[in-house]
Amino acid sequence: MEKVRRVGVVAGAVVMAAGVVVGPARAATASASGVGQASTATTIGATAKVATGTRSSAGTEASAAGARTAARPQGAAGTVRYAWLGSCVKGKYDVPCGPWKLVMRSGKTVAVRDATVFPVGANGKADKEAAAPFTVSADGARILYFRKSDRKLVWRAATGGRAHSLPGATARVPKGIGMGDVDATLSPDGGVVVLDYLDDNERLPTLVVDLADGHVARVPGSDAVHGFSPDGRRLLVSRQTSDNTTEFAVYDADGAQAESREVPQVVSNNAPVALADDGVTVAVVIVPSEGRPRLRQYDLSTDAVSPAVDLPITAQDAPYQIFWNDAGKLTLWHMRTKSDGTVSRVTASVVDPATGGLRKIDSFKGPSRVWNWWLPGE
Image (cartoon, rainbow, N blue to C red; front, side, top):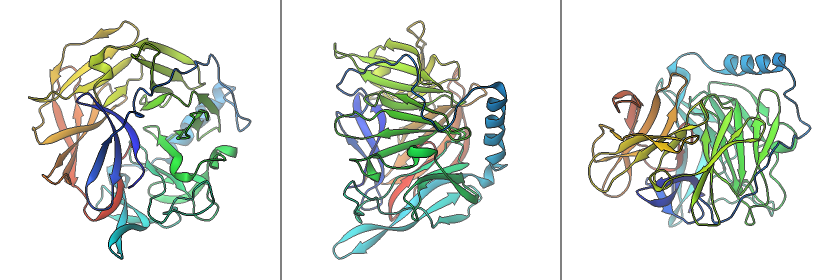
Protein backbone atom coordinates (compact mmCIF):
# COMPACT_ATOMS: atom_id res chain seq x y z
CA MET A 1 0.00 0.00 0.00
CA GLU A 2 1.22 3.48 -0.82
CA LYS A 3 2.77 5.76 1.79
CA VAL A 4 0.25 8.06 3.48
CA ARG A 5 0.39 11.62 4.74
CA ARG A 6 -1.21 13.23 7.74
CA VAL A 7 -4.23 15.33 6.92
CA GLY A 8 -6.43 15.77 9.95
CA VAL A 9 -9.65 14.64 11.53
CA VAL A 10 -12.83 14.00 9.58
CA ALA A 11 -16.11 13.44 11.41
CA GLY A 12 -14.26 12.74 14.64
CA ALA A 13 -11.81 10.17 13.26
CA VAL A 14 -8.12 10.75 12.68
CA VAL A 15 -7.33 10.03 9.05
CA MET A 16 -4.36 9.80 6.78
CA ALA A 17 -4.70 10.75 3.12
CA ALA A 18 -2.77 9.10 0.37
CA GLY A 19 -2.83 9.47 -3.34
CA VAL A 20 -4.29 6.57 -5.22
CA VAL A 21 -3.19 3.17 -3.93
CA VAL A 22 -2.91 0.20 -6.27
CA GLY A 23 -5.71 1.33 -8.54
CA PRO A 24 -7.79 4.44 -9.05
CA ALA A 25 -9.30 5.00 -5.60
CA ARG A 26 -7.92 7.75 -3.34
CA ALA A 27 -7.56 6.26 0.14
CA ALA A 28 -8.15 7.61 3.63
CA THR A 29 -6.95 5.28 6.35
CA ALA A 30 -7.71 5.70 10.07
CA SER A 31 -4.65 5.87 12.28
CA ALA A 32 -3.93 6.87 15.84
CA SER A 33 -0.58 8.32 14.79
CA GLY A 34 -2.07 11.22 12.84
CA VAL A 35 -3.23 14.48 14.32
CA GLY A 36 -2.59 14.74 18.04
CA GLN A 37 0.07 12.08 18.40
CA ALA A 38 0.23 10.40 21.79
CA SER A 39 3.32 12.11 23.11
CA THR A 40 4.13 15.30 24.92
CA ALA A 41 6.31 17.64 22.88
CA THR A 42 9.05 19.80 24.31
CA THR A 43 8.55 23.41 23.35
CA ILE A 44 11.54 25.29 22.06
CA GLY A 45 12.02 28.93 22.81
CA ALA A 46 14.36 29.81 19.96
CA THR A 47 15.50 28.34 16.69
CA ALA A 48 18.54 26.20 16.17
CA LYS A 49 19.96 27.63 12.97
CA VAL A 50 21.79 25.37 10.58
CA ALA A 51 24.79 26.95 8.90
CA THR A 52 23.09 27.21 5.54
CA GLY A 53 22.02 30.82 5.67
CA THR A 54 20.71 33.47 8.03
CA ARG A 55 17.96 36.04 8.09
CA SER A 56 20.00 38.99 9.32
CA SER A 57 18.73 42.11 7.59
CA ALA A 58 15.76 43.82 5.99
CA GLY A 59 17.67 43.70 2.72
CA THR A 60 17.86 39.91 2.87
CA GLU A 61 14.12 39.74 3.61
CA ALA A 62 13.31 41.92 0.61
CA SER A 63 15.62 39.92 -1.64
CA ALA A 64 14.03 36.65 -0.53
CA ALA A 65 10.52 37.97 -1.14
CA GLY A 66 11.52 39.18 -4.58
CA ALA A 67 13.04 35.83 -5.46
CA ARG A 68 9.81 34.06 -4.52
CA THR A 69 7.66 36.38 -6.62
CA ALA A 70 9.93 36.23 -9.66
CA ALA A 71 9.97 32.43 -9.64
CA ARG A 72 6.19 32.08 -9.91
CA PRO A 73 4.59 31.82 -13.36
CA GLN A 74 2.07 34.45 -14.31
CA GLY A 75 -1.54 33.37 -14.82
CA ALA A 76 -3.53 30.32 -13.86
CA ALA A 77 -2.69 28.42 -17.05
CA GLY A 78 0.89 27.96 -15.85
CA THR A 79 -0.11 26.31 -12.57
CA VAL A 80 -0.68 22.68 -11.61
CA ARG A 81 -4.08 21.05 -11.17
CA TYR A 82 -2.57 17.85 -9.83
CA ALA A 83 0.54 15.67 -10.04
CA TRP A 84 0.23 11.97 -10.78
CA LEU A 85 2.12 8.74 -11.24
CA GLY A 86 0.96 5.97 -13.51
CA SER A 87 -0.07 2.45 -12.54
CA CYS A 88 1.12 -0.55 -14.55
CA VAL A 89 0.28 -4.23 -14.31
CA LYS A 90 3.10 -6.50 -13.17
CA GLY A 91 2.05 -10.12 -13.07
CA LYS A 92 -1.18 -10.24 -11.07
CA TYR A 93 -0.97 -6.85 -9.41
CA ASP A 94 -0.36 -3.19 -10.10
CA VAL A 95 2.86 -1.26 -9.49
CA PRO A 96 3.78 2.39 -9.94
CA CYS A 97 5.42 3.37 -13.20
CA GLY A 98 6.85 6.71 -14.20
CA PRO A 99 7.57 9.36 -14.92
CA TRP A 100 5.79 11.75 -12.56
CA LYS A 101 3.49 14.03 -14.55
CA LEU A 102 1.82 17.39 -13.99
CA VAL A 103 -1.65 18.19 -15.30
CA MET A 104 -1.65 21.96 -15.80
CA ARG A 105 -4.72 24.20 -15.67
CA SER A 106 -4.06 24.97 -19.33
CA GLY A 107 -4.93 21.32 -20.06
CA LYS A 108 -1.34 20.45 -20.90
CA THR A 109 0.37 17.43 -19.30
CA VAL A 110 4.07 17.80 -18.47
CA ALA A 111 6.44 14.95 -17.54
CA VAL A 112 8.97 15.52 -14.73
CA ARG A 113 11.58 13.05 -15.96
CA ASP A 114 14.29 13.81 -13.43
CA ALA A 115 12.01 13.04 -10.45
CA THR A 116 12.59 9.81 -8.54
CA VAL A 117 9.75 7.33 -8.97
CA PHE A 118 10.76 4.50 -6.61
CA PRO A 119 11.77 5.59 -3.09
CA VAL A 120 15.17 4.51 -1.82
CA GLY A 121 14.98 3.03 1.67
CA ALA A 122 17.36 3.28 4.61
CA ASN A 123 19.06 0.12 3.29
CA GLY A 124 19.92 1.88 0.02
CA LYS A 125 17.53 -0.21 -2.07
CA ALA A 126 14.66 1.13 -4.19
CA ASP A 127 11.15 -0.06 -3.36
CA LYS A 128 9.54 -0.67 -6.75
CA GLU A 129 6.10 -1.15 -5.23
CA ALA A 130 5.91 2.35 -3.74
CA ALA A 131 6.14 5.96 -4.93
CA ALA A 132 8.73 8.51 -3.88
CA PRO A 133 7.51 11.81 -2.34
CA PHE A 134 6.35 14.55 -4.70
CA THR A 135 4.88 17.88 -3.60
CA VAL A 136 3.13 20.83 -5.28
CA SER A 137 2.71 24.24 -3.63
CA ALA A 138 -0.85 25.38 -2.92
CA ASP A 139 -0.65 28.04 -5.64
CA GLY A 140 0.33 25.32 -8.12
CA ALA A 141 3.48 27.18 -9.13
CA ARG A 142 6.30 25.12 -7.59
CA ILE A 143 7.12 21.44 -7.26
CA LEU A 144 9.50 19.56 -4.95
CA TYR A 145 10.86 16.04 -5.40
CA PHE A 146 13.90 13.76 -5.05
CA ARG A 147 16.15 14.08 -8.09
CA LYS A 148 17.14 10.79 -9.72
CA SER A 149 20.74 11.68 -10.46
CA ASP A 150 21.92 12.47 -6.92
CA ARG A 151 18.94 11.54 -4.68
CA LYS A 152 18.72 15.12 -3.42
CA LEU A 153 15.53 17.01 -2.61
CA VAL A 154 15.12 19.74 -5.22
CA TRP A 155 12.52 22.36 -6.17
CA ARG A 156 11.72 24.19 -9.37
CA ALA A 157 8.98 26.13 -11.10
CA ALA A 158 6.16 23.91 -12.34
CA THR A 159 6.53 25.40 -15.81
CA GLY A 160 10.12 24.15 -16.07
CA GLY A 161 13.61 25.53 -15.69
CA ARG A 162 16.54 24.56 -13.51
CA ALA A 163 15.99 22.45 -10.41
CA HIS A 164 17.49 23.90 -7.21
CA SER A 165 18.80 21.68 -4.42
CA LEU A 166 17.64 22.32 -0.86
CA PRO A 167 20.38 23.88 1.28
CA GLY A 168 23.10 21.74 2.84
CA ALA A 169 22.08 18.63 4.73
CA THR A 170 18.35 19.35 4.28
CA ALA A 171 18.63 18.00 0.72
CA ARG A 172 19.59 14.54 2.01
CA VAL A 173 17.55 11.90 3.82
CA PRO A 174 18.77 11.55 7.44
CA LYS A 175 20.46 8.30 8.38
CA GLY A 176 18.16 5.53 9.51
CA ILE A 177 15.15 6.44 7.37
CA GLY A 178 14.29 6.31 3.68
CA MET A 179 12.82 8.67 1.12
CA GLY A 180 9.34 7.36 1.90
CA ASP A 181 9.74 8.59 5.48
CA VAL A 182 10.15 12.21 4.40
CA ASP A 183 6.86 14.15 4.39
CA ALA A 184 7.52 17.45 2.62
CA THR A 185 5.01 20.30 2.43
CA LEU A 186 5.54 23.54 0.55
CA SER A 187 4.16 26.86 1.77
CA PRO A 188 1.33 28.30 -0.36
CA ASP A 189 3.73 30.31 -2.54
CA GLY A 190 6.37 27.57 -2.57
CA GLY A 191 8.95 29.74 -0.82
CA VAL A 192 9.28 27.59 2.32
CA VAL A 193 9.23 23.83 2.83
CA VAL A 194 8.58 21.88 6.03
CA LEU A 195 10.31 18.49 6.25
CA ASP A 196 8.57 16.17 8.67
CA TYR A 197 10.57 12.99 9.21
CA LEU A 198 8.49 9.93 10.03
CA ASP A 199 11.05 8.15 12.20
CA ASP A 200 9.78 5.55 14.68
CA ASN A 201 10.97 7.34 17.83
CA GLU A 202 10.08 10.87 16.65
CA ARG A 203 13.56 12.02 17.60
CA LEU A 204 14.33 13.86 14.39
CA PRO A 205 13.18 17.49 14.51
CA THR A 206 10.88 18.84 11.83
CA LEU A 207 12.80 21.32 9.66
CA VAL A 208 11.34 24.54 8.25
CA VAL A 209 13.51 25.61 5.30
CA ASP A 210 13.35 28.98 3.54
CA LEU A 211 14.23 28.20 -0.07
CA ALA A 212 15.21 31.79 -0.89
CA ASP A 213 17.80 32.48 1.81
CA GLY A 214 18.62 28.99 3.13
CA HIS A 215 17.46 29.72 6.67
CA VAL A 216 16.54 26.54 8.58
CA ALA A 217 14.43 26.44 11.77
CA ARG A 218 13.58 23.40 13.87
CA VAL A 219 10.35 22.45 15.63
CA PRO A 220 9.62 19.29 17.65
CA GLY A 221 9.35 16.22 15.46
CA SER A 222 6.59 14.85 17.67
CA ASP A 223 4.23 17.68 16.64
CA ALA A 224 1.74 16.92 13.87
CA VAL A 225 2.03 19.48 11.08
CA HIS A 226 -1.20 21.03 9.75
CA GLY A 227 0.20 23.66 7.40
CA PHE A 228 1.34 27.21 6.79
CA SER A 229 -0.24 30.62 7.01
CA PRO A 230 -0.72 32.20 3.54
CA ASP A 231 2.54 34.17 3.78
CA GLY A 232 4.51 31.06 4.76
CA ARG A 233 5.86 32.70 7.91
CA ARG A 234 3.87 30.69 10.46
CA LEU A 235 3.30 26.98 10.91
CA LEU A 236 0.30 25.38 12.62
CA VAL A 237 0.90 22.12 14.51
CA SER A 238 -0.91 20.02 17.09
CA ARG A 239 0.14 17.73 19.90
CA GLN A 240 -1.46 15.45 22.47
CA THR A 241 -1.13 16.61 26.08
CA SER A 242 -0.56 14.43 29.15
CA ASP A 243 -4.24 14.98 30.00
CA ASN A 244 -5.24 13.44 26.65
CA THR A 245 -6.40 16.76 25.23
CA THR A 246 -5.24 18.39 22.00
CA GLU A 247 -3.07 21.46 21.94
CA PHE A 248 -2.60 23.65 18.87
CA ALA A 249 0.61 25.66 18.55
CA VAL A 250 1.94 28.20 16.06
CA TYR A 251 5.64 28.60 15.29
CA ASP A 252 7.11 31.66 13.59
CA ALA A 253 9.72 31.71 10.82
CA ASP A 254 12.56 31.42 13.36
CA GLY A 255 11.12 28.31 15.02
CA ALA A 256 9.91 30.14 18.14
CA GLN A 257 6.50 29.21 19.51
CA ALA A 258 4.22 32.22 19.12
CA GLU A 259 0.89 30.79 20.31
CA SER A 260 -0.32 27.61 22.01
CA ARG A 261 -3.57 26.54 23.61
CA GLU A 262 -5.59 23.45 24.43
CA VAL A 263 -8.40 23.63 21.91
CA PRO A 264 -12.06 22.62 22.28
CA GLN A 265 -13.21 19.35 20.74
CA VAL A 266 -15.14 21.14 18.01
CA VAL A 267 -11.73 22.23 16.73
CA SER A 268 -9.59 19.20 17.54
CA ASN A 269 -12.11 16.64 16.27
CA ASN A 270 -12.73 18.17 12.86
CA ALA A 271 -10.83 18.90 9.67
CA PRO A 272 -9.60 20.33 7.42
CA VAL A 273 -8.12 23.29 9.29
CA ALA A 274 -6.13 26.33 8.12
CA LEU A 275 -4.16 29.12 9.78
CA ALA A 276 -4.62 32.77 8.76
CA ASP A 277 -1.84 35.35 8.37
CA ASP A 278 -2.63 36.88 11.77
CA GLY A 279 -1.19 33.74 13.36
CA VAL A 280 -4.19 33.15 15.65
CA THR A 281 -7.27 32.58 13.46
CA VAL A 282 -7.89 28.95 12.53
CA ALA A 283 -10.59 28.03 10.04
CA VAL A 284 -12.10 24.59 10.66
CA VAL A 285 -14.64 22.66 8.59
CA ILE A 286 -17.24 20.73 10.59
CA VAL A 287 -18.61 17.64 8.85
CA PRO A 288 -21.81 16.53 10.65
CA SER A 289 -23.37 13.10 10.31
CA GLU A 290 -26.33 14.79 8.61
CA GLY A 291 -26.72 18.04 6.74
CA ARG A 292 -24.23 20.32 5.04
CA PRO A 293 -20.66 20.88 6.20
CA ARG A 294 -20.17 24.05 8.24
CA LEU A 295 -17.32 26.48 8.69
CA ARG A 296 -16.18 27.95 12.01
CA GLN A 297 -13.31 30.24 12.98
CA TYR A 298 -11.32 29.67 16.14
CA ASP A 299 -9.15 32.32 17.83
CA LEU A 300 -6.08 30.79 19.49
CA SER A 301 -5.41 33.96 21.49
CA THR A 302 -8.87 34.19 23.09
CA ASP A 303 -10.21 30.60 22.85
CA ALA A 304 -13.32 31.97 21.09
CA VAL A 305 -15.21 29.92 18.49
CA SER A 306 -17.32 31.76 15.93
CA PRO A 307 -20.89 30.80 15.00
CA ALA A 308 -21.05 28.20 12.24
CA VAL A 309 -21.92 29.10 8.66
CA ASP A 310 -23.16 26.51 6.17
CA LEU A 311 -21.04 25.59 3.16
CA PRO A 312 -23.35 25.16 0.14
CA ILE A 313 -21.88 21.98 -1.31
CA THR A 314 -23.80 18.81 -2.03
CA ALA A 315 -23.97 15.79 0.27
CA GLN A 316 -21.90 13.89 -2.30
CA ASP A 317 -19.01 16.36 -1.99
CA ALA A 318 -16.56 15.87 0.88
CA PRO A 319 -14.37 18.80 2.07
CA TYR A 320 -10.76 17.75 1.59
CA GLN A 321 -8.43 20.66 2.29
CA ILE A 322 -8.71 24.38 2.95
CA PHE A 323 -6.32 27.35 2.78
CA TRP A 324 -6.53 31.03 3.68
CA ASN A 325 -5.40 33.49 1.03
CA ASP A 326 -3.83 36.90 1.52
CA ALA A 327 -7.18 38.60 0.82
CA GLY A 328 -8.81 37.07 3.90
CA LYS A 329 -10.80 34.48 1.93
CA LEU A 330 -10.48 30.70 1.92
CA THR A 331 -9.88 28.21 -0.85
CA LEU A 332 -11.72 24.93 -0.29
CA TRP A 333 -10.99 21.74 -2.19
CA HIS A 334 -13.85 19.24 -2.14
CA MET A 335 -14.23 15.84 -3.79
CA ARG A 336 -17.11 13.80 -5.09
CA THR A 337 -16.70 10.03 -4.91
CA LYS A 338 -18.40 7.04 -6.48
CA SER A 339 -19.85 4.12 -4.53
CA ASP A 340 -16.57 2.21 -4.97
CA GLY A 341 -14.61 5.03 -3.34
CA THR A 342 -13.00 6.41 -6.50
CA VAL A 343 -12.96 10.17 -6.93
CA SER A 344 -15.21 11.29 -9.79
CA ARG A 345 -14.78 15.08 -9.50
CA VAL A 346 -12.49 17.52 -7.74
CA THR A 347 -13.56 21.15 -7.23
CA ALA A 348 -11.81 24.22 -5.83
CA SER A 349 -13.93 27.11 -4.55
CA VAL A 350 -13.25 30.45 -2.90
CA VAL A 351 -15.15 30.74 0.39
CA ASP A 352 -16.33 33.89 2.13
CA PRO A 353 -15.62 33.02 5.79
CA ALA A 354 -18.29 35.40 7.04
CA THR A 355 -21.18 33.95 5.04
CA GLY A 356 -19.97 30.58 3.72
CA GLY A 357 -20.71 31.71 0.17
CA LEU A 358 -18.81 29.78 -2.52
CA ARG A 359 -17.41 30.82 -5.87
CA LYS A 360 -16.09 27.93 -7.96
CA ILE A 361 -12.65 28.58 -9.44
CA ASP A 362 -11.77 25.15 -10.88
CA SER A 363 -13.32 21.73 -11.37
CA PHE A 364 -12.11 18.59 -13.10
CA LYS A 365 -12.67 14.85 -13.30
CA GLY A 366 -10.81 12.69 -10.81
CA PRO A 367 -7.87 10.85 -12.41
CA SER A 368 -8.24 7.14 -13.15
CA ARG A 369 -5.76 4.27 -13.45
CA VAL A 370 -3.08 6.08 -11.52
CA TRP A 371 -0.96 4.80 -8.66
CA ASN A 372 -0.71 8.09 -6.79
CA TRP A 373 -1.81 11.69 -7.23
CA TRP A 374 -1.45 14.88 -5.26
CA LEU A 375 -3.36 18.15 -5.28
CA PRO A 376 -1.61 21.51 -4.82
CA GLY A 377 -0.90 22.08 -1.15
CA GLU A 378 -0.76 18.40 -0.11
